[in-house]
Length: 467
Image (tube, rainbow, N blue to C red; front, side):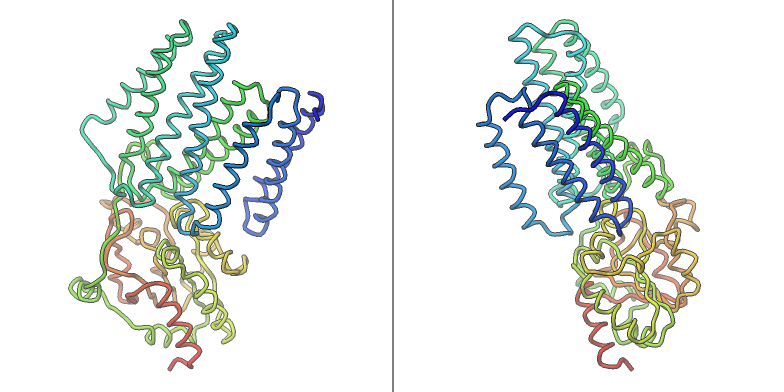
């Protein structure tokens, strides 16, 4: 069965509208599920319209590719943990980048054999290959850093910016030569250097900036898809690629504002460190540093009769999968008449919306989850602030220490709560590698242990009647 170009164009238009509705829905947790449905419907319609188009002459390889992708995707979806979602997103970005490279190279081979290459097409091919290759290798490095295969510390070396500039100029030179001469050698060198540039651009970026980098790579993948759309003369790919490209760029800008940094500073600044370490002497190190430690019973003493408790989730909650235990604890507090709210920083976790997704997974109501600008005025009225694995986004050094690498970054005003309890596995700093001044305040105490175990302990103690 085949449809005419007009019907296919109409189907593509409807798909594009559904994708726009999907983006709109994803702007708020309450409508995110609906946004996902719109996106899935739009993609299904786009695939069907493409498969029944006149340009498709054979279905064998297409069916094989779709089947293989479906099996791999289903297996990953069933296996991947929510904590691994950032690296999965990075991996998916790399697939988009490599697809753009392969489509461009395949188009070049086919059109060269047919003798139908032209300067405009050559330019489109060059742009698609460059963006796709940079997206692929950059996303692979981001995946490695998030997965722990590569150290989260920035890999900085002398002359790296000059090297990147030289690689960029070489790409432009070979790209121009490729467009003018249709040289296979220039094509190969342009592609290879683009892969190397993606590597050298991302390897110096530390773990603290990974949320922004994931968003930026998302933008790159969109532009790679748009370039592929021009190559294939597919209007829907161009539209969707532009939507993803612009939305990723806007999100990167918003996140940079949340960190009080420019995108140039993120890409070329290279701060951030690997925060992995043991916990054997956490309490002893706390005493040595002059930090107070507390027990679950101490925290319950304050919380069971509190008027308002604000919970601040971070990556430690994600690693421990403590969101369900927090939901139980929240319900028990509410039964006692305590007002409970969750405070979300824009860059908490390892990707945009990481904490929101985890809390939604635990069925924590959306009206209990507030963004930074909404919740900050409420901290002075909170009897207790419970920090669950968040570090850099609660650090008062961002406001009080001009020498700190995170100075100027908007933070959650946890320090203004009457009493603060922080659940931590160790005294190690967060991903930015900066000591948190919050821990040294008189109204702050640390509860050492796995976030899930501690939250379950809090719930059990509350059930037992506390003090």
